[in-house]
Length: 85
Image (cartoon, rainbow, N blue to C red):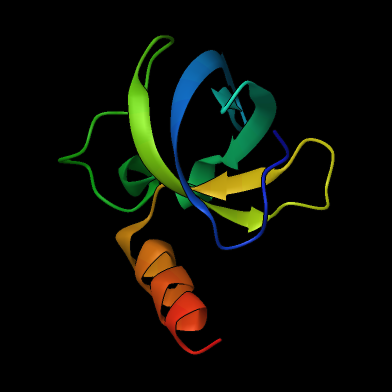
């Protein structure tokens, strides 16, 4: 099932890279940039590890792989966008 922009989804981390995290969401490979995870912004939040499940939002479903964010701010923005449609 393709991921669509502003869709909220659970994602499982499948690989940790120096620049971000490979993930799988709804059976689709996806990517979370390191700056789109709370650990980038707060030393009190642990970086995700392989196998971790995160609540995310799709920032760009048209990219290959789709780009996700685990930031609360991005999730709230997507909710506002969806409710205004």
